[in-house]
Image (cartoon, rainbow, N blue to C red):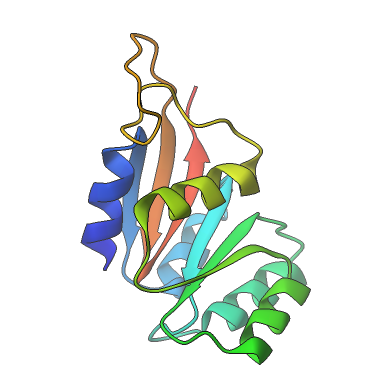
Length: 141
């Protein structure tokens, strides 16, 4: 899943970085806070909800897109209550994920993105971190 998300986001003017676990991601944010987090509900060391709660407890307010294979109303409600900007079910539709990320960050779709439908010489780059089955987004300037 990480590799597929990385490829999708790379093709859409994002720069992916991957993480094997939530703990590895948490270690990375000591010095560098991402612009957006895309997190799977089910991960090995933390659930996506546990990660959201942890980030809230340390006052790291990161716009979040939650992805899951199971569309559970209770999980959706808890995710939203924890600050999730979007809740998407698998299988993910690429343009829907990209739209959710951009909406969460308040960004417009990069003109050079395949999802934008037009080519541009100016390319806005967003740096993406992928963690476990999940990813985070950071804008590069």
